Image (cartoon, rainbow, N blue to C red; front, side, top):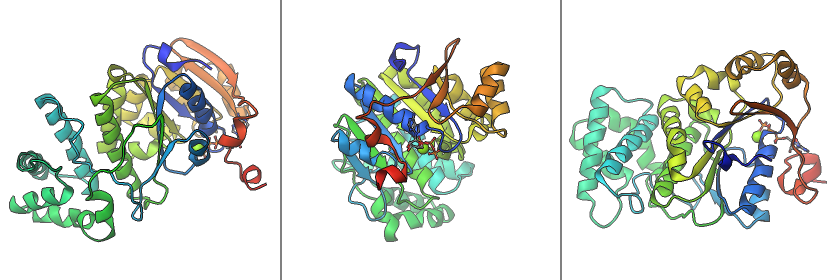
Amino acid sequence: MLDRFSLHNANSITFAQSGSGKSYTTKVEILRQLMQGTKVIVIDPEREYKNLSESVDGTYIKLSTRSKDKINPFDLATTFHSKDDLSEHIQDLTDVIGLMAEGLDKSEKAAVDRAILKVYKKAKKSQPRLQDLYAELHDLGQLQLCERLERYISGSLAGVFNSHTNIELDNRLVIFDIKDMASNLRPIMMLIISNFVKNQVMASPEKRLLVIDEGWLLLEHEQSARFVAGLVRRARKYYLGVSIISQQANDFLHSEYGRAIASQSALRILMRQDTTTIRGVVDEFNLSEYEQSFLLTCERGDALIVADQNHVAVRVVAADKEHPLITTNPTEIYA
Ligand SMILES: Nc1ncnc2c1ncn2[C@@H]1O[C@H](COP(=O)(O)OP(=O)(O)OP(=O)(O)O)[C@@H](O)[C@H]1O
Ligand SMILES: [Mg+2]
């Protein structure tokens, strides 16, 4: 398979209908990237990468209300280098808070900005947490906003969003499993993980691939869509490839940020489409009549790869030894 790191950027998007082989294809690539020394991080909303992780001794991090693994979105320990980094980090954090609060109006946004700065000023040795921000916002009189954030700092969600970080990205394969998070919290967690990864990648650039499966979840909200588009745009600087996988080609290509992501991805992997998605894909990637009918009729594992000006049809075949590690077909797993 084509090496994404030889293209002008190492990002990709993969679009196809359910069951056509998106995750399978991605896992085949992950195994090959690992062999070449690339470090791989996966955000896995559907628990599709567990076997793969076990087979190569990956680090498997489960994030849910019952999990011991934690990420503190306010953690600056490994990331703070300069004033510029801090202002960027504050913007990213504001987006996280905005997603939690289901949107921020102008005055709330300004208050969050001020409160974050204050929180970091006050924090000396230990890292601040969400509850510290909550207290500042309370002092600033943002009671309505505090009410919306309250659920994240008390009760069962406090353990998820108000704890100190206790994980690391030191292994060559790290999977973040968020299947046990309630569906309305998944986009928030995906954004927090992406943020964490971005900070780590900026602090120590090396050849890495970040895979975001079910990536449309991040495009549903403006805050996370903007963040990912920014990450994809600047990934090359940090020797990072971002691979975004999505069933929802339409949603993706109708969003301003989705289209930005598509145009910043040198590698486009298109697999079987249905009649509702084909038009958007054909228009976006200038596909021929022949390619259009290929995508409507091809089999599981078949793909049309669009890289720069080149269009190539391929069939994804795993080695015999690889297949059992990466299939999710229940009749094979439970046979
Ligand atoms: N190239 C292939 N060779 C052999 N089997 C394959 C191939 N691609 C997919 N499969 C089989 O099809 C199943 C479904 O594929 P996969 O999980 O990759 O679909 P998907 O596109 O990610 O679907 P979803 O959008 O629902 O997550 C796999 O578990 C595997 O058993
Ligand atoms: Mg999948």
